[in-house]
Amino acid sequence: MIELAEIEAARGRIAGAAVRTPLVRLHAGDGTAEIYLKLETLQPINSFKIRGATNAIMLASPGERAKGLVTASAGNMAQGVAWAARELGLPATIAVPESAPEAKLAAIARLGGTVVKLPYDDWWNVIITSHLDGAEGLFVHPVQDPAVMAGNGTIGLEILEDLPDPDAVVIPYGGGGLTAGIASVVKALRPQTRILTAEPEGGAALVAALRAGQPATVDYRPSFVDGAGSRRVLDSMWPLVAPLVDEALAIPVAEAAAAVRTLAERVRVIAEGAGAIAPAAALSGRAGPGKVVCVVSGGNINLAKVSEILNGAAG
Image 1 (cartoon, helix red, strand yellow):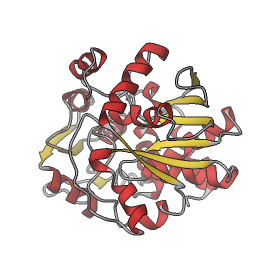
Image 2 (image 1 turned 180 degrees about the horizontal axis):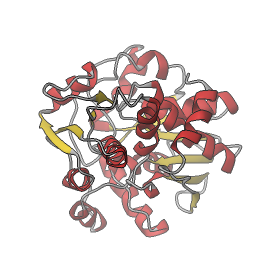
Image 3 (image 1 turned 180 degrees about the vertical axis):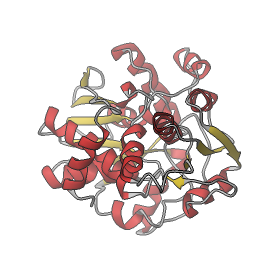
């Protein structure tokens, strides 16, 4: 677990960069669950990633970050690092998978970041090794940096302050840093709350790992749910995440698309695929009854894709 004191300290450190996002009720579903949405879509970069990126970067010394910042991201951590780099007057170099959506690439460019596109396996290797050939600067790991996880954990503090007695918290699972941060808070302050993760069926690596009792490789199929799911749970994250997660859920991509429509219709929120997958889990009933908090992790999605989904596309 990430220490609660580190997460509390992170809250002070990121104040002024990240905002406190609202927890709003979603009136939808079959009525067995009270669904609440933690709207990280309202962050300055439309994603929770600004929390962890800012905390990690501000903890580093000026000397460590003097040559600039480097990360590997499907798009949202890239924006968090690029945002912080711009504020500090530093260059930012971002490795992205070739399938990264144009909306996220355009946002990185607007913030002044330099994009390096890589095949998925090469990009994943950058995450594993924390090294991008040819790039100088402080590498801000999108997942396994404890400071990033502590920044992410501030979401958990806010959830429990706004709703002290949730029965479950559903978190989209990509690399595990968001889950580790939020779950560390929830299990420390309200251990009876269940922690559930949501992944697309075409990349449900945590589902496979929990079933096998260890990280296992799955047949990864890219989809519009680009910020959640992976080919394999990071070995470095497995010992941290496994004790914190009560259940991992695999969600059909079509259900994530339906959740995008529901959020747009009911609460006028535009969610990206990873942002919609936790509400999809709750709307399907998979998250169980009672008070269910869904982390809507981001809203960086191509407008053309939103239009397709709103007009009935299944993703």
